[in-house]
Length: 256
Image 1 (cartoon, rainbow, N blue to C red):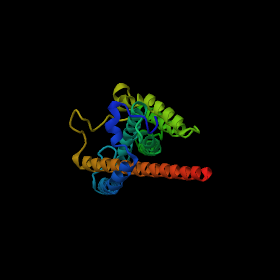
Image 2: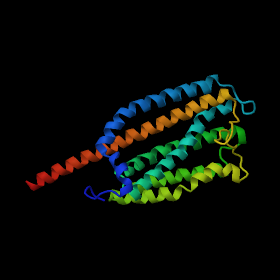
Image 3: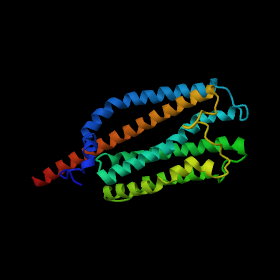
Image 4: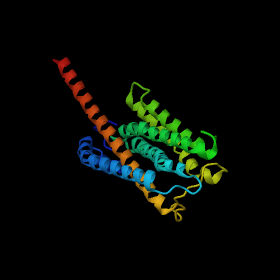
């Protein structure tokens, strides 16, 4: 779809809010606030959890790694869901910024998934006696990491960027089936990984003195994720605009 082609009826509102200039103006105001919230909440939650929250009665101080591991695990899935949503916006509504946002979400999501796997291994060593086991939860998160890497590679594998964006979007939508497997793997199979302690359908099974710093860390990590993606997408939009200006000037010079 070029600039003269009207968007589908259901996408007019989306396109109104996806104007690159409007995005740069709004994100420029939002980014500092989101970044400061992410930094402040993460520092508060980590200091509280690592130095003031009580140790677990079974796992001892080894449980403190959850203040990094659990938010990283949450963002690994959240990031891929965001990637899938951008893919739908791109394939169905030809959203002008969806492809750029997806291309920037991929590396950030892969980094958080790698952090989840690394901290999980560090936590698993004293608890299970091994750095890695082919547990259903661990294996499905590893598959998620490879899906991220595949998306990052695909969107950059073609000379025509649109072909890369389309291939990456299709992969993201196919891979989204892995998200419920990650979520429910501890319920569907007999796994070493513990079940979820925070559920929407019931009260948390965690002591409140450990729950609050964990929630602060999760919220801080989420704001940090959003801030990083916003900053990267802003840079991508400005890079595209600069490239377009340079190409226009080159064409003008050739015409002379």
